[in-house]
Image (tube, rainbow, N blue to C red; front, side, top):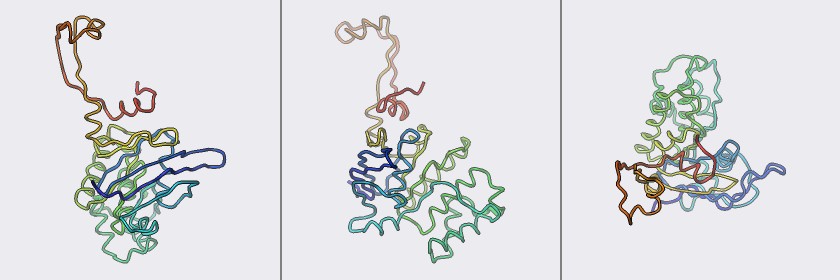
Length: 268
């Protein structure tokens, strides 16, 4: 079993009288692409901020990094994207140089490395002229400065067209496979998250109600669709009576369907 590089135990978080996280338990292993799923306001961004040390929590414990790391050391090995915050009158390289200095990354070659990773090595224009997809890529490049072992991405494909979404997906898979980077990602596009991540956590009512792998999802959601001459009779005595079957096909539940099955509601 892979080593856990992020572990949250019984995390609680309130803003005044409003309770956001009631009892969050979460374990993310080294090398995973972990998809965090939940409604708007369910606490996904709050979990990210707690992991990063940008928000205090009211109870529980947090461990980040490898065995023996302090919380500070673990956070120091983490890069994050939680939105875009660039100077529009500067180009990609100039913006990353600003953040390289701010993050105290000594190696000036880091800018070339991360621009190539996200496919912006040839971009010369000011950020104000960038497309949405290019801005998202620049945000991920910023998160990759310093070659972090853990990458946290909050809605990195928000607002992108299908091609832009596919490009980000392929880029993240490449970063994960070639660099061994552990990636935690949130997205409202569950079909895309299903194509990107290999582990999932479903957040509802301030708790992680389910953690599962892509293999777990496949096993749990596989079913057989039958077309019969009498649905009610088939339900009651299919195996015993041998109802005539006109058609049979294998099917599977999507991540979106599985999510609604766990938390209630409908995708209709």
